[in-house]
Amino acid sequence: MGLILNLETATTNCSVSLARDGVILALKEQNTPNYSHSEQLHVFIEKCLDEADCSLNELNAIAVSKGPGSYTGLRIGVSAAKGLCFSLGIPLIAIATLKSMASQIDASAGEHIIPVLDARRMEVYAAVFDSNLNEVRGTEAQIIDEESFEAYSQNKRTYIVGSGAEKDQAGLGPTQFFIQN
Image (cartoon, rainbow, N blue to C red; front, side):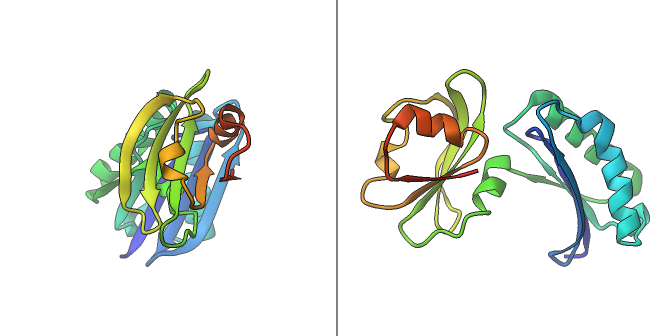
């Protein structure tokens, strides 16, 4: 795998990590409602490299969240990643935001994971994954109502994760969903 710089700017969380062969060497992040990406991203990159005692020239690739998410946040992260990759001559790896969020959940066979990002008002960006992280339903912008994810929750545990999870809970009322932020 090598040494990979990971950037996440799709949400209010500005996050940078440095990993070697899948093991995190350094992590810097800040989650504020004020979107501090433009001020913090390059500072976090520098701090991660310093903490891991690495240089930009040692990187084998850069991974960046490709959305959905905040247009401005994504633009900041992708621009930084593309600029660094171009100047260093290394590959850029684009990671789907919702799949990355789903990978945080350890679901059992037959269960579904539904990562949701708040898109304002009663709308979210959502996708549905099975317990093996296979996409069951692609990413959609949707308005939340009582039937939004009903088909995926019948007689099985369903995890909703992300900034839109609370919105889903409010729209669905008492359900068998397990909310995880």
